[in-house]
Image (cartoon, rainbow, N blue to C red; front, side, top):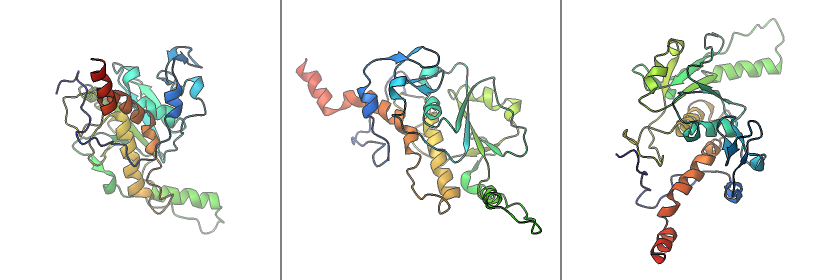
Length: 267
């Protein structure tokens, strides 16, 4: 596939985001011009891809997503900030997503925090293969507070507390994956999905954009560990695709019948 060509829209006209509970894009559509980031003062359209904040005009108008685990995104230094879909997660889930530019990597040596890396290594396991850790032994000689009991229940249900994603081209992943600081992390894989990323790529459709990988990981995590224990709303993470679905629409708007008719009318 020519990576410089746009990936064609599904021939059946289907919308890959149909049925998802994604907030209205009206605020994005109404934004007609760029403005200055409230932190770095650089000119931006919807959000600042250096500071990971929305432009002032969109403050308090974007959906905020709460994730069940913390997310660290390690971005390759050669990955263009403005093209990174991982930044969508940092803007939409600011309390749970942290961005790092390689070679900066957090310290994952703390044994009290279980961390996994999403990467298709030879020893990677699926989320379904994870066995939740047993609850801590209770000291029956002491009265246990409700907060302590809740913490123990959470420990028993959640096999890890932090997940790491690598954000770069597939040709650059090995440099980060082979870093000695990540070698001790258990690798996990998510269920197979097809990307709807609009830019052509030489890999198959199963290679997801980073924001797609984060979204589908959360969906699989919800199904594997949280169903029946928390809200059964399976769409709770759909707004992670808020910017992604909007940009998909912008890229393919020229494919619509109305747009093609306007082109024909204008010669």
